[in-house]
Amino acid sequence: MNWLRAFGRFWLDFIVGDDWKIAAGVALALLGGAALAASVSAESTWVAPVIGAGIVLVFAAVVIADVRGR
Image (cartoon, rainbow, N blue to C red):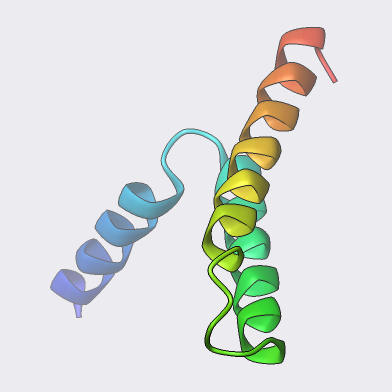
């Protein structure tokens, strides 16, 4: 059971890293992008750049909020 706990802690540290807010924002952006991709036709090539822009905006917002001390 100890190895299972260590395995879980490794993946939590690997995915979340130092800032849980960035990980949560990226997860929300990916979920929103998946919902967007499921709701549009398969021929839409603009979905991937929108998802990428969402991830970049989430990252930038978290970094700016951390720099300002909020």
